[in-house]
Length: 298
Image (cartoon, rainbow, N blue to C red):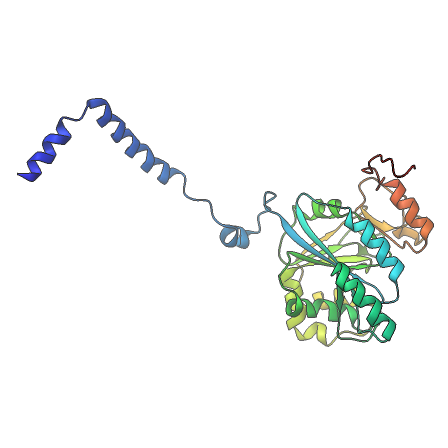
């Protein structure tokens, strides 16, 4: 008796409502079959490495410098602190080995408290005796998070962060080795190695450096050449990109590695003097966003 009552109630529903319910059910099922949920970045994109410009990536730039170069760090904090990128989250850190003087421990402690942008490695300060290896191999163990890319840069380089991130945006996220290929006349990133002015790895290569015995047994000698040797022996970095002419040495400082400043610049190297920094910052109009103020006159 109860079943019959339910059938009668359905039968007397208005025809328009019945049509509406039918078509709603039909199209909802059709939509589910035709448009499956989009794959997450952790699945298909992670394997295919398809560029996904709508998703921000991250870069850590480690500037290898020395503890006593307080003035240079102050300048670089100003230079990088005003730059932004719409496609990448970028952290800039200063990297040196163990402190050896009491004054460094006090002054640099103040910097750490104020800026929190210093990495102190467990090594003796050097240029070509393993500091670069210690930097990359330590990161997976000391960083609170992983980055898409990790860069090593000199403290006499001016990097335009937005141009760097835009250059990286379409490139692979794994097995990537990026920089300025040596020799200067070459445009083939697979022939030799990237200049020490500033080269970059995808995170998987950083992890490999920390785990593999190949880099650990090759730490003495010119650091940029050693990096190229590591990758060759380990059959790594199948994805390589040399960003010429956007990366170069300051005009007149290094033969064929140098050329005049150009608008599409990513990085300028060999800025040893204040007048060179002034020329570069003026050329790229770094202070163009400065607002007029009653407190100062320029």
